[in-house]
Each structure stands twice: as C-alpha cells, then as structure tokens.
Image 1 (cartoon, chains in turn green, orange):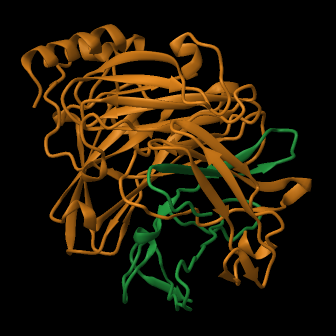
Image 2: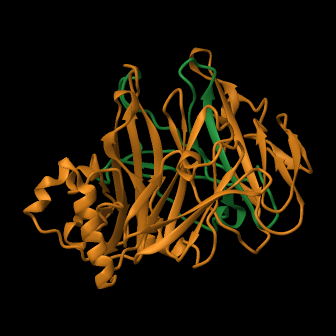
Image 3: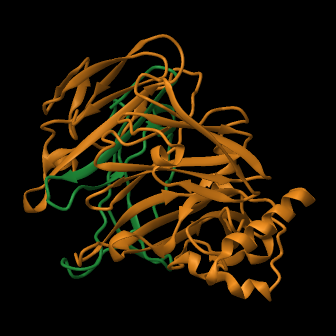
Length: 90
Length: 352
C-alpha cells in the first residue's frame, strides 16, 4: 500500500481472525519509499530469528523480501547463529 | 542531568510507589542520578503478570558488526522508579555475535513494566542493532507464546519539541482496548495526551508529568481520560522533547496486543509502503487479513490512494500483471482518520 501525500500517517495490522479465541497479529510498519531504496551493496541485519527442529514446538522464522523499485533486484541472504558462525546462504 | 527538585521528586515517587515488592530499598539507598548519554529506547518492556494468569516478559537481542567489541548499556525506568545511572547494566557485544539476555527486566530493581533506555560505547549508535520481543504464554492453557517485536528507537529519530506524536487507537473500541505509552528520554517534563475522534475533534485531554527517564502507560486511555470510547480514533501526545510514544491495542478476547509506534507530520511528499499485507486462509479455519489506518494530519482534504502489488507482479497504473490487485481511494480531511480493510484481497498465498 502506498500513499504519496505529505502529512499522511499510515499504520497496518496483519492478524489472524476467525478463531474463537480472538485475533492474534502484529503491526507492520509503514516505510517511506526513500528509506526503502537501498543503493549498491548495502547490508541490513535482522536479529532475533529462531527455528525449532520440531515443527510442533518452539519457533519458526519467515523472511520477507520486497523490491520497491521497478527493476529486478538480487538479494543475498546469509544466516548466522548467535555466535556469528555462517550457517547458510540463499 | 535533571534538577535537584526533579531528583527529590523522583525519590519520593520511588518510596510512595514502590509497594511491598520494593521494601528492600528502604535500607538500600538508590542513586537517583539519571543515566547520561542515552542513545535510544525500547519504549515498553515487561516482567509482570497479565490477565488470565499470563506473565509478560521481554527478550532483548543486540548486535553490531563495526568493531571487535562494543559495550551496550541498558537502563530501565518507569514512573515510580525512573532509570538510574547506578542501576544500568553493561553487556559486551562482540563483532558479529548476538547478545540474547532473556527476560531483561528481571535484573533491575524496579516493579515492571518499564521502558528500556540504552546506549552504545565503542560504536556510533546507528551501527548497533537493538531489538526486543515482549511476549507471554497464551492464556487458558493454550500452548505456545504470543507477543510483539519492538525495535530500539534512537533519540536522534524522535521529533523536535512541540511536534505532536500520533498513535492510532483501536478501530473497534468495543472488542479491543487501547493503551498509550510514553517513555521520557530526557529531564522531567509534562506530556499532554489528547484523544481525537475519527473526525479529528478533540474528545478528551489530560496532562501527565513524567520524571526524567520515567515511563508511563495509560491503560485503557478512554477510561483513563474519563471519556466514552470511540472507534477509529487516535491519540496525540505532545510536550517537550524528547519522548517516545506508542499505542498498545489489545484484543479483549485473546489478550494479544499490537504495538503501534507513534508517527508525526512530515513536510515532504513521500510515498509509504507497508511491506506485506494478507488475506488468505491460515491454520484451523482461521483467516489472515490486514487492516490499515491512515490519518490526514495537516492540510486540506486529500485523497489517499491505497494500492496493492502482488509478489511477482509489475504495476502499470493500477493494473498489476501476474495477479489480481485492488485499488481503493479514501478521502480524508484535516485531522481525520481513514481506513481500509483487506485491501490486498485475493493476493495469493505466496505473500504470506
């Protein structure tokens, strides 16, 4: 979703509805398009990921990649453990 | 930092607000000198009981890749027990490694919840990453946890004095409750919280004085301000900078809160993206969906264009190739709220 006008403030909540226990979800921040344009080989860091070996317990982590430009972009993802050891590459 | 009067006030607040859980402080002097050179805040952290037998806690993560070893200093404070320099904790953070203190507030001599205040030593604050998740085990014996992530917010990104911070409140005020939180990143100050309805009309207002590096959450802001509940309304905390504000909107049925960080007016014409939206089936017959809320904070009535792009599509005008897309336009006047629900309807599963 985009809104190109000044002084428009935007928030969103993506959530799971339809269950008897109410809703569960989270806020997803609105990002200015000039903030989202990364030039060259800029690197971002995500921390706090977790992946349980047992699909029925613990956590799993999903990673989203969004190209906000009009040209194809190549993303390289490297996954490290908490000690900084490289565990895999996408 | 802070005046002698401020410090006396903070000490009195500590004694009066401490309660039985803080009797130990009667014999352990607390240095009320607030921390200096704070770089940022995580405006809400917990280690306290919630409703339905839940217990909230906050996990902290921090990392840096700039130098072999940097130090992260973490302080904690609330209204009754503002952050004190002598109580801050130091964590070494090696290059490329992730600091993971579980239940970070458990090491502080205060009664949570509280805000975290942090600073980096050895690197510019912009080169450090601070992230938290505040969560609880699900109520009523359900397995697993639920909660909310929150980034560290740098002092340099907060607005100047006199700039109102805006937070949306619950779109449905009957099934959700709306809390508003304020973390003070400077000397004692008064922050006024004003609530406006969907038409932008002020329906309630109250001023709060926060000690230096103190924090307060207004639980059920409508009740707190003594006003009726209004759906699609928003709150406007304003006062002397710097402070950070947020809304925590909790589902009364599930207890799950969603933290909405404050935003503020900007001059330039800038597009905004919400990186993902959904409308697709989830587990056990549930449905994922996205609500969006926009506020026209200043200027004349304008149209707000909500448009969606699918995962693999390219957009020409409003027509997206590769998947179906919807575009909805909302008209919003100065100070009014506009909202859209599930604007990404029929977006395929791969966006999830």
